[in-house]
Image 1 (cartoon, rainbow, N blue to C red):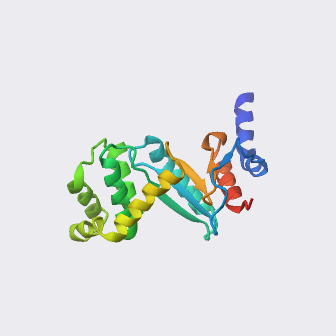
Image 2 (cartoon, one colour):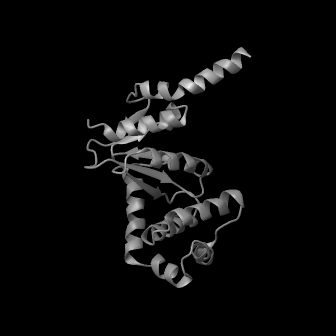
Image 3 (cartoon, one colour):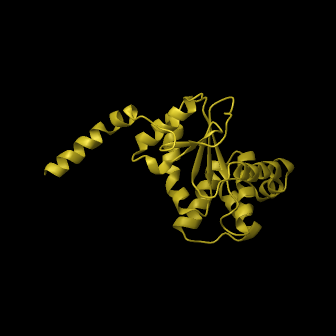
Length: 202
């Protein structure tokens, strides 16, 4: 009974504890670049083939709802998981962003791979995903080979290389700070840490 009461008390005090936490470089975050972006932003590196990224999605949704509107959240799909389909799904996600259906497409792909346990093989399967998201096959096919989509997919690849991303999910804040997600123990603490870093100016 005492253990139950202690746990209940800890859950009540958790938001207060997270707000009072002192976040330290080397423990909670790392500085990966010397200069920060001009405006606050969060970049999430992820892969549709990453089970942890799939489970991380609800946390990112909560984070997005908790931050000020001026804090941009960018999602960067990486190529190094999924073998030949890794770059294909990077291109597909870039197309989804250009067509402004990225949330629908991401949910469908994550569900297909991690819930239905079905493989995605080539353009036919990708086009079916876009149709399921409400985009015509013709429009999706055109977008997948368009210059803006190829440019965005290339930018994702460059950002992955620039920040030397070797594992996902990885969170980079203001283009300067890498979040050590293993250093936090609750959703509130994670949000407080990211919020702290978006406001950090040195």
